[in-house]
Image (cartoon, helix red, strand yellow):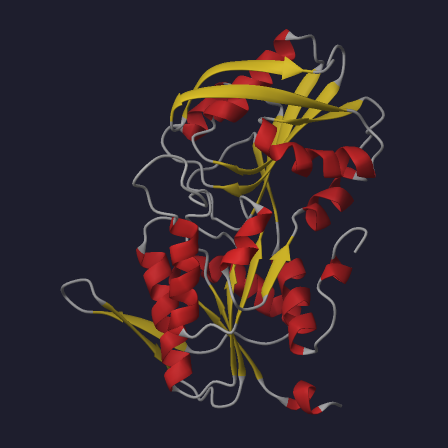
Length: 315
């Protein structure tokens, strides 16, 4: 056994990702560490690690979806471990919040994804592990290693159990073409694109379908579903163009506002999502696939200095 493999691994969960962290720990074969987040009467948080982490490989599992306290809790946990002389600190962030704000698309706005990267590094993180950034280039905002897991490692095995002879993959917007093309190329299927125009954030003004969908079973592919407006609009237009059925795969179920109602009322047969964010409501149309096994294997490979890309299809 190498010296590195002898270094103890410690897995800890943030408050809002405990449902996922417990499953990751179970696959890993190691119990979650003892950490408690105390709250003062004014709302301030104070995470306390109730076991030694000196010299250990420490992994903090916490998605940073709204509210922003989830991010603050993660930063404080990292700082606590750094001050307790942890040997190596990895922030496992299944859903990386603020990733959509990755550029200045108008005057006088922040590049929030870059600022979050700076905060995580300043807190003491030595490594970041996440899944399906909104844009791959966000990895460049960090000066520390980033393990960028792909949900295709979960969705492709699931799709392989289906009859895909009549399937066409689709991107709900031009920005997601690369993501949808990955599936189209892997399964040797055609690809169509929904071109949208927005008047304001979270509101689609116009949309057109580029490509032929007549009598096809269409699968829309995206990194996240927020208000579900784009997704449901794309599904409706695809059906109007003559498709036989439409389902969707979106990694992160943000599902804000009246998204659940939109999905229930939509023409979508099914919405596949991952458990990077817990569902707020139950829906017969929404099916959740677990990321726990993939994250547990990635954590093990990180500790043992083995390839992460080997976990992906074609890696």
